[in-house]
Image (cartoon, rainbow, N blue to C red; front, side, top):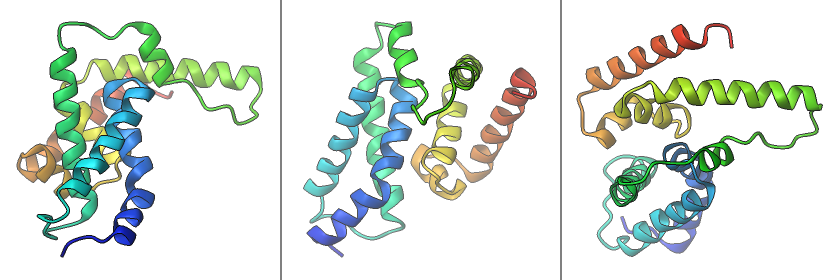
Length: 169
């Protein structure tokens, strides 16, 4: 079934923010995440005539996003992310909290970021797809092209490692 403009607009509304959050969690830059999110939907729209419903459109879009992230990282590989890029990706949203609450949140986010850096790339990817993308483990398995049991194992190990590092944070 070829998606029409209305159906495609629904995809953007339903999955756009999740895809952008996932991409930002993997590239650490909000402007780049926005660009890659837009490119994800541009590629999906360009390929709409060959699209065949074989699962959820969410999984299809996350597959496109994941491939764009891989391409982006390959291009960026020689350089490392500087702390300013990383910090801007994890800045807390201003929602009227006190300065003390913002400071605690910022410190916790920094601790989480540091803990996430200790995970392997596949563990990070699995957690981000699960919690930012809100994908099922079966969908994650398809996206990362690994058996379901392996994906479950990576997620479990990642969570255990984070619990060990972060404790009660």
